[in-house]
Length: 270
Length: 294
Image 1: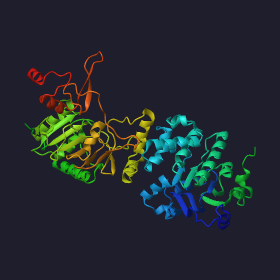
Image 2: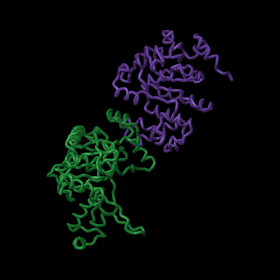
Image 3: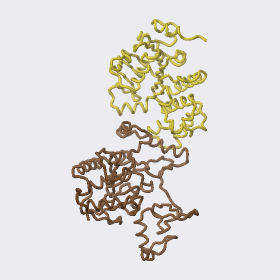
């Protein structure tokens, strides 16, 4: 199945994968978080991770994005300069430099990913300043540009995210993440907690921006509609294990594993 | 006359050794905050417990001590700390900047340039410059270790975005020796340039937070800024009302209940010296007259 998925991946070109995960496992004491997770992610590809609550999706994402420490396995990442590194064995300074520069993380709750008490502009500018931008005008220009791109009125550059609606906060978080042109973006339920019409707009936006920036994406969601819209490829998780992976349409239209069949059939058709 | 029943300079010798070790480490790593086992001192936190411990650890019997509080030698904090060391160490004290070998300061650097023969001890309330952006100590230590200082500029950015310029006017963050970001204690940013390549040793003691840090002599101290919003210090349209100085940091003093105000040097010693030398401001009586009135 792995081989099949690989050969059908959109990157038919001979580019090596951006991220290769092998045998990743995480236990919380005796409780299983996830185990035996293996996949490849190609440049520009969006990988969806679906499954029910407690299936280990977020654990997996947190392991990958260095929020928590995995117990075993390899996370092989190809850096911008072509060097391949095992993320888990990198010194912390390199890890944080990668997280700051080449990777981005969009939290489920925008309040986790934003500084609510500094202005929207500074939120976007923070990653730029962390990378050494020291020209106020330049930083501000970039910030207003990105606000416009995520459909937030540029007049609100100096307002606090605290006073933004949930949808605006989420879009601001996305702008803040994408401003440094990351190569790999992790998203945990990016549309969670938003109402349906806002969700649809946001999904459109994410799809467009990710494409524009040329980032690879790993999106965790329990919503199959989100997965269908965003992801090129899907990984289905159950009880900490990956039970099926393949092209999104293939997995959703012709599910093989009984659990995937259950998952797909339990979606309400309106 | 010194009190009996205390060790020289109040602290016991073991404590002084511990503090001196922290100071040595601090001098070796300019701007790095060294934790130390701060002792209870006979004055409340916030009154200079950090500075007083550093002073106690470095003071010798032949030192001449000057203590200033916001530039003044005659305010409660300065007077009581000066008297404390008079009593417990029997050292000479002075109000003259040039005559002092050791100066403990609360929130000012004397206007008169310091020399290699002097040590300046700062009282520090909050030693962590990243504190307002990042509440977790574990995280701020990592940020220092990995030179992750982007958030410091977020704060300055906010000032410019909301108010058009960097309004932070005291405790203005600096980068020491091209490495650590340091809180210079709440001195006005007017004093920041004096820290750069100062011939005197600068020691910082934070009693409540139990941190010591230092800037060795002739070390670069650069105030953070943006390329298009460079660092600048406070300026005043007029000079000191008493001595006419235009190059010193001025305090605003309310003189009546009808909105009357005067601007005077915050450094009292500097102001007095100038008046003694015959400099007069618009509101001053001739110096001899004020001396006669005393």
